[in-house]
Image (cartoon, rainbow, N blue to C red; front, top):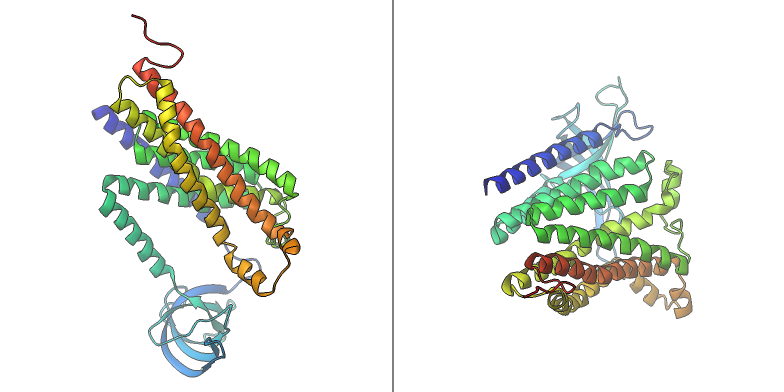
Length: 386
């Protein structure tokens, strides 16, 4: 027990140090926007609505202009009250300011300029505090319902966030190959997340092996389906913006990376479920051999895959739902709809990830059955001799 405790202490210490290093790496980069000297986005609180020239339009959205006095909450002029303009548009900018409300303000003042020589307008609501509260509330719910396991799950979520935001994104922007970096860091996320949640158990390493094979299956299906549908990665709308912004290396790989990150959780869920099933059956029936464990695992796996694949496909379809409604309103012909590039990309997203998950289940069941049956000395190929 003491040795097991020491393993966990060392594991969490190493992971926390690694996260600190990743955060330092991400924050050490120059985050100042190009050509933005004297420009900043600052949180502010509305002190007074000086003038309100807004009204409701035909669809009930508020449009017009507000003139505000706001108190800056950060930056060199923290605490100062400045005047800011707030222009409301029904789609892109619908921030209706009231006294006491926290906002994010675009503030521009060239170095050396007088205090009154500035330009300020409202950018958006300041949602940062709300986001922190919601996330901490979710972590609290995990801890309340699942105890220590919930806390470990929250820890794995924080690690995943740090890896993606402070390490993966800076590496890609710096010119490293996106696909390779995403695969390697996805494997890192799998290992740390599953060990932190399940501990140093045999079923943990079975889950890690199954999830890793899931990434391999996903890569194969992505290459096959993208070739059939003639999706190169340059078909994504945002790619042109990335090229203009200066990211020219590996742009075509970003779609591969995005789908892998989106489906990584589902792959881990399936592998954990199948590894736990084979482990529990082995613990309950100490005479179960490879054949029995694999057969039982696949029976349960069918139900898991049936629901999980449906969930994954619906999740990807949901991201495209509003566009589908727009197509329906405009009576887009089926031949045009089915041949759209964005439809093909959604099919690639849904099927490549779901197919990988389908193969991840038997692969994990096979590995788990072999590991736990061998543990009892009863694998299919070597029955105990009397």
